[in-house]
Amino acid sequence: MQDAAFYDIHCHLLNLSHPAFVSIIESMRHRPREVIYSQIASFDYLASSLLKRGGENLRNLLAVMDNDCADILFLLEDDLSGQFKEPKKTPGFRQAPPLRNGKLYIADQQFSSFVLTPLIMDFLAPSSFSPETYYNRPPQKWIEAQIIDVLFAICTYREKRPSGFLKIYPFLGINTGHYTAEELSAFLEQWLGNYTKSENDIERRFLSYSFDAIADFQSYSIFSGIKLYPPMGFDPWPEDPAEREKVELLYSFAETKGVPITTHCDDQGYRIISLEESLKFTAPSRYRPVLQKYPRLILNFAHMGKRHIRTIRGNEQADWRKDIFDLIIEYPNVYSDFSFTAGEPSFYEELASTLNHLKEPEQEKIIQRILFGSDFMVNLFKVRSYRDYLEYFSESVLSVEKKRLFCSVNPRRFLFGDQKA
Image (tube, rainbow, N blue to C red):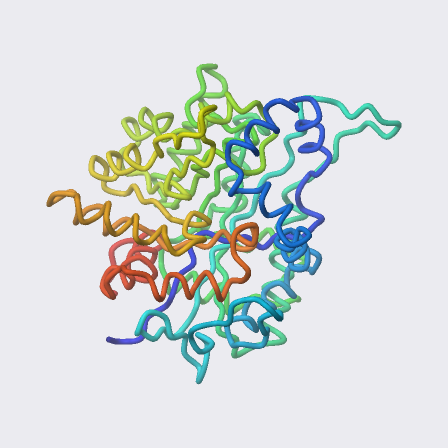
C-alpha cells in the first residue's frame, strides 16, 4: 500500500487557561442533583477516574493540560516515539512505539504523516448563575485568545521541529448565540472567508506558519473546519426566528464552501446548561431539519452518539448510534467519529458486531463514513496515554481494510472531498 496520512479527526489542544472553570463550577453548584445523578449513573465515565489510584487519571490529564499548547504537541509526538515509559505496576505496551524510522506503524500498515484536527472550543458562554463571591464577574473567555495560543503552538512546533511528523489543521469553535447575524457573518468571513477544500492549500498553509505572521494572524485562513458544542448552549435548530436565522447563515456558509462540521454527540462533557436542555440539543434528531434544508452539509457526529448515563435502575440507555446511522444512510456527507468512546478494547468488538449485522448497501455506506478520533487529552479520563489508545485501535478485531478506511481514507474525504487515497 502506498504511504498515506493517519488522521485523528477529533482531538484538542487545550491548556488550563482555556476552559471557563468558574462557569462549570457554578452550573454544578446550582444543579447538584443533576451532577450526582449523571456521575453515579455513568460511573465509568468520570467518577471512577477521580477515585481510582488516588485520582491517577485526573492527575495524568492535568500533567498534560498544565503545559502550553506547543509543549502538548511535543509531548504527543514524543509519546508516539516511545519516550514515555509505563509506571511501575502498570501494564506494559504490547507493541513497539508506533512512530519509528520516520513512519507511523498502525495495524500492519505504515503512514507517512499524522494529521491532527484540534477542535477549538468556544468557552465564552457564562453559566446562567452568577458566582456568589466578591469578584462576581463571569470570566471572559474570548475565542481569539485560544486561536492565538493554537497558532503560536503551530509556529513553535514548526520552528523547533521543522521535520516533525505532525500536521495540525484546527477547527474553529462557533456558538451562534454569541453573535448578531451581522457579527456572525463577519466572523465567518474573517476566519473562513479564504477557506479552500484543497489538501495542497491546507498543507501549504500549515508549512508556511511563522512567528513573523502572528501579528497579522487574522489574515491567515488557519481553519479546516467548524466545531459545534450543544452542551454549552448551542441549539442546532432553534425555534426563535432570530436565532434560527443565525444557524441557517452558518449552515448555508458551510454547505456552500464545503466546510466540514464536527458536533459533540454524547450525553456527557463540559456542560453549563441543564441536562434536559443538553440532551435535547445534542440528540442527532435535532439535526434532521438541518439536513433536510442543507442536504449537502458535511457533518460529523462525534463520539458515535454514546449514552453514558444509565437509567435509575442501572440499565443502559439506547445509544444515539442508530439515529446517526440512519442519517448516514439518508444523506451523502454525514459521518461519525468514535473519539473517547473507543477508550476500551471492547468498543471495537461491539462495533464489529454491529457492522457485521447490517445489510448491504447500508453496511457499505456506514463503513465509508466512520472516522478515527481520540478526544485527546479528554480521553485521559479513560485511558493512560495516547499510545494506549492507538494500541487498542491497532490490535482491535476490525479488519485491516476497515482500519485503513477509518483512520485514513474516510477522514481524508471528510476534510478534502472525494480524492484518490
